[in-house]
Amino acid sequence: MLHRLGRLLAVPVLLVLALVAQPAAPALAAVETMTVDMTAFGGTPTYRASGFIYGISQNGASPSASLQSQIKVKVMRAGGSQIGCPNGGYVNGGYAARWNFIKAYYARARATGARFSLLLSGMWGSDGVCNVPRWPGDGGNWTEYTNFVNQLIADAKANGMTGSDVRWDMWNEPNIFFWGRTQSQYLEMIRRGTQLVRAAIPGAVIEGPSYAGVPTASNSWWTTYLNYVKANNVVPNIMSWHDLPGDPATDAANLSGMLSSRGIAISGTSVNEYGAFGDEQQPGPSAWYISRLERCNCDGARANWGMVGQTPSLYDTFGWLVTANANQPMGQWWVYQRYASQTGQRTKITPSSSHDGIVFQDSSARRSLAVYGAKAGGAQGAIDIRYTGIPSWLGTSSVNVLVERMPSTNAYVSAPTVVSNSRVTVSGGAITVSVNWTSAKDAYAVTLTP
Image 1 (cartoon, rainbow, N blue to C red):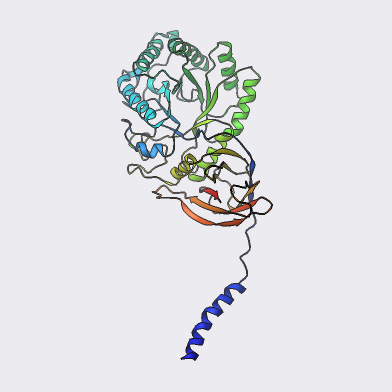
Image 2: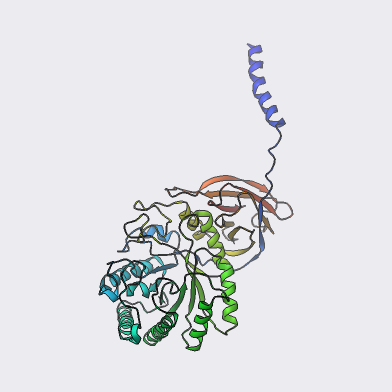
């Protein structure tokens, strides 16, 4: 009996010795490194990157308001596109149906704390799908356009849409097929429309040009536009463009130089379509775009190019954040949920060449929450996140590090995947969190607690 017991006891002892003797797995060499300086911080959350164009049913009912509120959407942009096609919109006698849609969307925006960008091109009937028999100002006749804008103004006033929560987005992507005439005719339309709105609604927020592409000093369309709006005193309050693809931080810096050289002042910038379908509308690139939008203090709205009857539809999925029809969160919805959960003070982060993040620290909550992503086609492998200047309220000897992955998938994701949740030793006021980033389409959240 004792002999048998000794043999049984020996087995776990040998196993323990074998485990102790086992050499540690070699650490992966970092492909890229991001650095977070926790001694440099300031600025409370705005959640400015959480927005989309269309993405909700035409009656404003689904996906649910709860799913929207949980990601703290700040921008909803729409103009009734595709409703009544092939002959929809004001120019085709189909104004009423699109205005009823606007009322439903505005009600949803108000209920969930979002601003509403009223897209005039969609209301006119220029949506890339419907027939457009006439364009504003054809043949030098501006009567129809004047009547159109005045109709919008009257309806906006009747429905309480005269505050700063409404942005008058004067036309979508006027440099491509959404505008079918010359740039000079477009500019005259902008002058007339802007003057009508500002005269009727003091303090109205004008947005434009919602250009299909990024602003650069070498782009003659942009330089002509900027020179014109300044000379005619119709500079929009919010300057907007589309990154499909692009880098909001770089583009905003370019635009700032273009505005400064002309003495043009604006109140803000908006990348009111970002992240094209495909690889860019996955968790990793979504988190990267959020980070870049936060860097330039730009508002953002996710792109949404669906067609009515397709999956995803133009009027569905919050711009591909939730599943079509079932309206369940996907991996990228969780990116926005973790972004919406950030509190405290925005913290300085130095990005790597293809990865970036948005980091907040909250001393009262004793927590730092960060969301990290990679641009489309970004580096894969070991990505180091170096936290320096760890504050004493987090811990002087060790901190707890929770790493979660938001997976790339177009299916329901009930919650982010916990990759690790363990204590990490603080050395010299710093720690390094190494993430084995096996796919650039994935995003990660890192939470530090005492």
